[in-house]
Image 1 (spheres, rainbow, N blue to C red):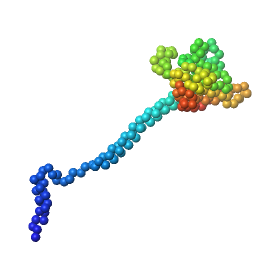
Image 2 (cartoon, rainbow, N blue to C red; image 1 turned 90 degrees about the vertical axis):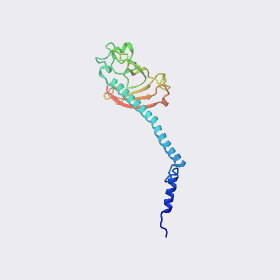
Image 3 (cartoon, one colour; image 1 turned 180 degrees about the horizontal axis):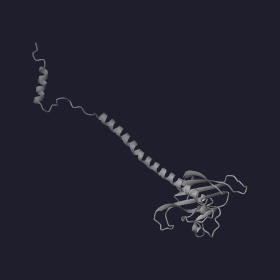
Image 4 (cartoon, rainbow, N blue to C red; image 1 turned 30 degrees about the vertical axis):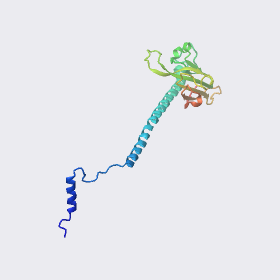
Length: 221
């Protein structure tokens, strides 16, 4: 009869006590395969995260361009509708007959210097198209300029071959403005006019390579 059923275990414990370098139990660890798989998963995750950065930058740039285009289109439509500058009102140059709608085509935006600076064009035709190139330039109007760089027109043409088709140096963007008579109330050309404003980025490349934002409004005669 075995009076010591755990004699073997007791012996193992004795061996452990005599050999301190031998662990009480086997230590588990990651295998090389597990490490490689973990590194692969981490690499895929980090690659996906890094890929989001340029996407976010592109979306931010597109949002900025779209906002700029909308603001510029609203400015152009506001000039066409403005009774003070567009129809020879108190804000217009008293020495020039400004009967008709006006569009800014030069840097200075004051209608008081219309005749000397040629900074506005008068639209009197029922069918009219004009191309305007814009660039970032510091404010130089009165009152005292603040030095802030703003978007201002610097050249224009009624012909697409002048600069619109191929682009022009220093142009941040190009605006294509089309005005057409919707219908005539008195059969004399009077009445509401439809205005299509196409803002294209960037203005330095040919038109087929530009990004376009199209806006539509109306002005009355």
